[in-house]
Every structure is written in C-alpha cells, then in structure tokens.
Length: 148
Image (cartoon, rainbow, N blue to C red; front, side, top):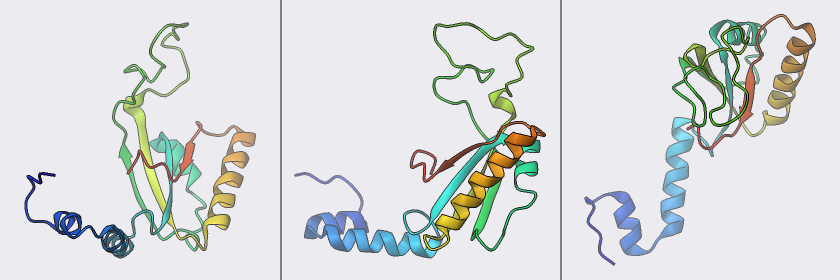
C-alpha cells in the first residue's frame, strides 16, 4: 500500500490499522458539530413561500436547529424547468410545477430521542396542508445521506 496524503488523523488511523479509533473520533466530531449520524435530520424542499407556510407552526421543542432555507441547484435527471429529463410528454409553461430555480431547501435537525415525535409532526403537517390545498407542495426526506 502506498499513501500519498498529508499527515492527517485519517492516515494515522490507517497506518495503525485502527478503524475503531477512526470511527470513534469521527462520531465524536460529528456529535460536537451536531451532524449525522449523531443526530437525525429532515430536508424540506419547496418554494420559499411553501416552506414558510409549512414551518409556520413549527414545534421548536422537537427540533435542535434549522438551517436554511437555501436555494437548491439543478437536480440530477431534471431539466432547467424542474421537469424530468428524458423521453416522455413535455409539460408546457402553464404547468403548475415550480421550476428548480425557485426551489429552496430547509434542514431540520433533531435528536434520536425526539425522532418519533418529530417525524409524526412532519407527517401530520404535510397531510394537513395537503388536505387544505392552501400552498404548493413541500417534499420531505428524512436522513437523506446524499444531501449532506
């Protein structure tokens, strides 16, 4: 094996063949920073207005912190208009789907202890807003490793 990296903690753990020490150090760092897998998170994606409506009654006791909303870049497999790329029927400009340029993402971080209540709140909020039809849809994903 040849290591061509700088002298870092990862290289030190590799040289000593200490995967448990590396994993423990990484988990301690992520716990200190409040990042997964030390905590869980939900990613809410939608227009800025839809996210504001969705989080209007946010139960702050369930969530450790929020990050965003921030603009979402182009999504893989989607055109600039937010429609799926590839063959199939094209939607015209009158389509009610929000373009990817208008999409924003909000991250909600919560502990494992409050996870059942937090996910139940997210599900109930999404269902209530969907039943009322008062705002654009908000896409909710929990623990999506490809987002962080």
